[in-house]
Image (cartoon, rainbow, N blue to C red; front, side):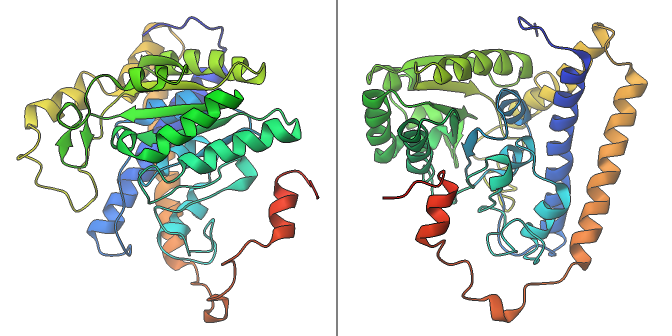
Length: 339
């Protein structure tokens, strides 16, 4: 792990805390499911924390992101609060979408999060449309589209890459290649390299170690700056790994990946452990300080779960509310354009 950018202690501390926050959120979300307190399914982000944090640390609140069905990490990294997140997972009225979106449909427009999407590749068009609006309205925000390696098989990706390249849109397509498309190894379903697919449209493409938060942040910062100068779009393939199964119910994984493989990623290649060791080696944080941070965030997450469990559900009178945004609301959100 190396840092080619100039960071201060606050930057390192924030990135470490954000990764720990994601892991703590996922640990508690998994327990909520296993204890039958959370409705529906959810898809854990544990193991991929350096991707969400490394990218979102390069963005401002005005910059947009779109997320995936495995989207808790992106939401937290872009500024989402524990209480509202857990309320959303539990269908409570204080959730980001008033409990109507659940695990796979969290949005937080106050931090530029245009929403997670349960449809594989479903947010690609939304992200590209947001980037088009930025260019059309002369606004300075950049959009990052998160998706998994399996989504590169969707025809929509090729359509939006074509448009983004033609119109030089300020969008970064961030492919989190965790090695598996549901239960199948990526190399068994994806011919050739993923970066070559983007390059075929004239889009600059990059590969980066998705377990190295500093490497991810370094590259993303450069690409965001270039997007603001009109040099987009870009594609990043981030090599990473999901610690859990495809979803929380996928607990018997021996038939498609080995225990040894999982153990290696969870120990030798764990993004939080490795960044913590680097912070110790660089004398930025001590071992005791790292433990204190983990304990503090663990307690914060547990308190937020307790809060969400006791929070009220939406009133039945809201059943047909928030179904449509309305034209005026949509135009206001895009910058007040009319006509």
